[in-house]
Amino acid sequence: MSRTRRTLGPMAQEWLYKATTTIAPFEDTRNLAVVDGFLCKAHFESGGVRQKADLVDQVHHGDIVHIYYVEDDGGAHTLGSFEIVAPPRSLHPSRFSGPVGHTDLVRVVDDAFTQRLKTLGYEDDARLGYVTGWALNPAPTAVPPPYTSDLFRPRQVLRRYP
Image (cartoon, rainbow, N blue to C red; front, side, top):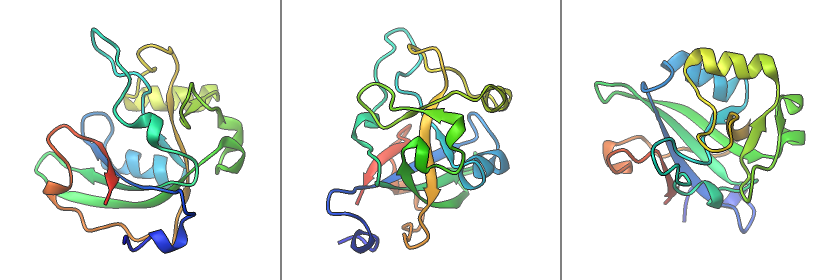
């Protein structure tokens, strides 16, 4: 049994998310999660097929996501643990609308926040044409597992835990 399960509802899941230097630097990624309560995640991946991103339709409100930031040299920072929430429960409810499709992703509807995300390097969802992600609230009772490189397969950024 996970260390967090006792504090979650009976249907809640825990997730691990690995952010990297591919888009935004550590401080910007940390601020998006901790200060802005947002984790950018596309519903549809870019590329020729524009296929649905792995597992996004399985992450639900009330679930906990443990976020790590992994540097190019393999060094990692734990950003913290967060609950996935609907826009009205988010730190900045007017920034988001949702849900997006059959997921609990939110659409960023605040123009200034969208512009800030794009300045950091985030792009519109490949098929939907707007920025998507999860609204987050801190989950202070959740304890993230220590980061080790074997928590994720190569190129995997989201996985169920344990």
